Length: 399
Ligand code: NAD
Image 1 (cartoon, protein in one colour):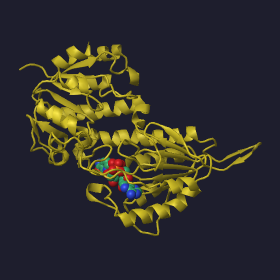
Image 2 (spheres, protein in one colour; image 1 turned 120 degrees about the vertical axis):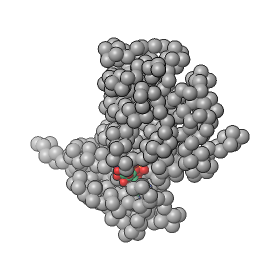
Image 3 (spheres, protein in one colour; image 1 turned 45 degrees about the horizontal axis):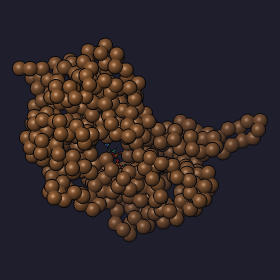
Image 4 (cartoon, rainbow, N blue to C red; image 1 turned 120 degrees about the horizontal axis):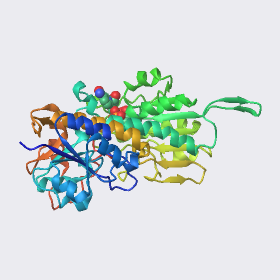
């Protein structure tokens, strides 16, 4: 039986500096009997040079040769369009591929007989899957960086400072959405000395926010938005309006607002309306982690850009913060990748088994068919190019 060849590609998306596997990950995959091939320069954006991959035992190749030899390709984001035509039936592609929002990619890989595996679909509440949870590891990096980005755009101190030149008030930070990213943002803002409040529509978030030493914002509207699997549900139009109105009062009193709200399979909810932004004080900063081509939590935020409003508020459309934490985010992602690959490989070969709960979540297509029911439900027939309206989230979580 030949050795399984696992290839790591250099990311091609604009501003993407992460890499799917670091040199430590190379060693982990070799330990399960795989040969690791790495595209020249793949780790450069995250400060892993070619020599460090070679020292770990990887073989460096140019892209064409790498893809020709690979049994399984690892990437951070979806593959570039120009490589799709070079893939062959039986190869596997593993990454954070957001299949719910990339129907063309799902079709292209499925039609070529490529086994599409996406970390977005991992059943995250399974204890044995936790080492593979890339959505959490990347959200954690994003939440941390969001606070640093906010601090960079905020023209005042975060902590209370008492100096001979006077006393500065601590920054008042409000974090909307207290999932993995939000909780990391709360902890980071606290460490910088801000006075922090958190809010989430899931009642379970209350104790988590408080345990980090932050205040939990209680809305009089009393919306309980827990959905399935620990996620939030989509609010009704009335609930949404009540939430926006009541949040507006609180938002106007804060210097910095960081939004992280997502609902799996839906466009991100708008929590901060344009009217609310207009009520904020000049010099305030809003960081929208949900900003994407599908929308965001803040009206007027633009993914990848910082917009200065007429009333002097900076709206940061923080589209890909994990990339700005390229080294730490890649190291964590690499651990997640290696753990999942170890789970997928049996006797030195990729062993697809849809009876397995983890595989049922992550394997999107195999043998020329879409095997994930959640993805099959939203990937329209080839003649239709757009996903159904309102049916996809920015990260495309499947579970
Ligand atoms: P997410 O990215 O889907 O959403 C971020 C947060 O936004 C969530 O906390 C959600 O409740 C909140 N939100 C959605 N709509 C909102 C609205 N209208 N107003 C206010 N907040 C809103 O979530 P996530 O960070 O991926 O985590 C979701 C849940 O999964 C959490 O309960 C988390 O603890 C849980 N989780 C569990 C495990 C595990 O069991 N191992 C691992 C990861 C996450």
